[in-house]
Length: 602
Image (cartoon, rainbow, N blue to C red):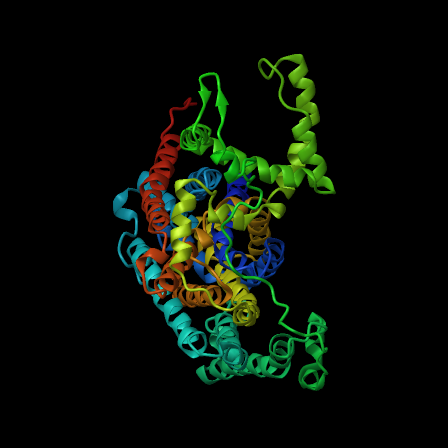
């Protein structure tokens, strides 16, 4: 029986579930893809495409188990005493609290865990609804708050260990060699084997209940997993190795990307006579302001005598005066930040298409004097609204992630990042080019793992709300999550990544430590392994914490603490810890006010 009298609660809960999924994509998914974009293995636009596809695959095939923990592992279903209306209200308040907090943090580029935000909100709502004694604070067979919050300390450390081990394997196998390029090419199938095996394992081992793969015998799981991983390894040896060998070792710049289908036939291809070097992208992190204007005065101008009212100055006096003038003309930190943003906006104004039109419209129609309600400002608003909508949809597609991560020259942040990059060893582009292909696969694996794990954040409470509303029974919370709900919210997650993910990406990746494809694939593999292990035990671990721990672990492999921006890491940890009491308090207060609000009695 549908609870028609509570349809408005279902509608509000649906809106907040979608907002939570949007923020999940803008915050958590953006962090998961920041490694690949920072390493220049893929562009931001390519990350959006791959992210959309693999987030949906992970959510639909594996995501149901994690959602069950969110639904039933924190507040026992029996605590609602069969009242479906109160159950709907409780999870709606939890979604409202979690999504509001994550939205505020994303707006201010504060990277937080949407997983722990929602869990904390559900705990706060549980205290306000059924009392602290009814909330599962302990382990609860791996589904209580004790088990979930244990991941706060375990996940980053475990992920960092996995990522460091993988990178050290690459480092001692390839990077320290006198001629590392052939070693990178010939060992690449092994890393394809690892990535293929993990991705297959996440689907087969305790896979989606709808597929029934968790009922297969152990030999079947092992055979399919290793067979698929071995198949990926074999295909890479047949098609990938000859392709990279021709482009990098033979320096054949005439080989196009689609020629990998030729396989071993590429080895017989004649190399052009003018092939002097391998044409590979530059993966180095560059920290310089290419548009910085040089001083119009030369050294001779400063040293030349200058004539004033008091007479002729000596060269030394003229130089001292010029230094004083330059020092007083230095821009403040705020001015440098404004100048940096103005330079980027100026580049976007030159673009063709809708974004260029929108940026020019906003530039050429500034706000006039007076308040918003002035007639001339109302006219300007009508002109700016279409441009603002276009900018909101397309601004992230053209945002310069790398420039934002390296910091603006002349600021304390820029100096800090220069120190971090100086203490990280740089490897040849030919070697990094090989691992950029491996990172594409590891990035997709990480995205699949995120979809498998973090989809439960939004879909778990939403499934409870929908089940209670559509059947009128609080016991419906134990029913399987419908596939259509997983699909809808996974699309909403992708929308958050596409439109607003840049706001988190700009403070991750190279902002923590120096990135490159060999480092990036190690980080993503370490994070993916950790997330999938936790997911198989139905523990909603934070993907954000895993990738951050993996980033720090690989950064420390440089052999010095100076290669890691621990100030940024400290801010991340502080935001993680602050999320627990803040989200819990918001959820509890909201539920307590609504549940106990005064009302007219009949």
